[in-house]
Image: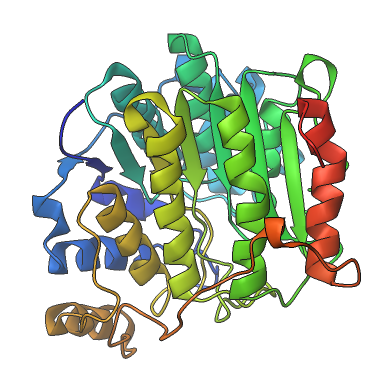
Length: 390
């Protein structure tokens, strides 16, 4: 394995732009890369710009008629076919939509190829993580499902066990759907409860079907869950599953929209807890995955100045074995960039000032506690299907 992580980046990914009033503002990507550079992380990783995913790659997950519909909407946004989820409020059509969506997907696919072939142990594409897109339709700000495409490419290359861990505030429904009957892919999603948040899926009882029964695991967290509960749930579910599954590659999705400042959801997680989970994913990759193969992706996140750039810069630093000190003062050059681009004042430090902690599941659970009820529901639904104790 190479000693340096790969950071997948092409400035053109900032063209993934649904318009000025849309919450997925591509400035979050530009500001993240700016902060990565401000901390000098671009000098300790290999920055790689991959080619867009071609049609044969896109068809590993997406139907041919859907790819054709995206191409048509890309060429003429006014002709977008809403039967494919295009031209809607969530997924407005825009010129060049196919090209930039394929470019983002290409970065995640290339990241997967690099870790599988041993060019690097860790690869990051924070522009990726677009986990809602379905085989035949756009959904939830996502046109092509780059996590699913990266996993499908790994399977095509010969991988027999791929684990996907999704900690975005929204259920990783598109990835789950792509591998619903495939026992080679373990999908684990921790998300806000579907009663209170899009896409209204991700119930504990969703465990896969056919040969893939038990290969989907969902933790539906109560609205308002903060650091202690979020971390307790992660550690009560994820390490045990990975220890049993022993994946050949770990793919993780790190949507930053679990944060208490995010305007589109209702969890109350801090930047410091997000960083803690990133560190845990890194450690789990080295503990349970041969060669530490780890593909880390971005995802949602709509506090585009205060949260997203800091969160994903931490992700890059952790993957590069060069973690950013949470107490460090953010370089003034980046804060100047923030003001120039947004007319907002950027955050001053790489921390929310929290010290995350949690009670391990093994210490016992409270049957009256809503968080513990959620974890227990997941363990009872999914763990016995994998031969594990609930």
